[in-house]
Image (spheres, rainbow, N blue to C red):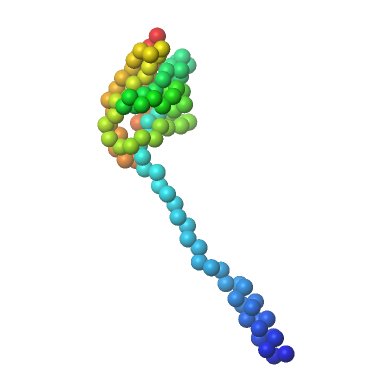
Length: 106
């Protein structure tokens, strides 16, 4: 009987022990690029960075979403019906964010 009581007590004591936990966080320090548009027509422009298309510029509005790219120098172009309407060379460092102000170029 004494063995049973000691066993139950030891089991209760072991059940109260928490195993160590680890909390891991991943930090995304890639630079971000966003746009501030002066007209709603500019949202339909196609965004190209270094010749690679990233869809409509309206997807990357300031305060809503940023385009994450690698740090370094980039050529940003906005296209309307296959014609370049805006181009700018930007340098983005790690962890920095840039907002480009774009007007309507129709």
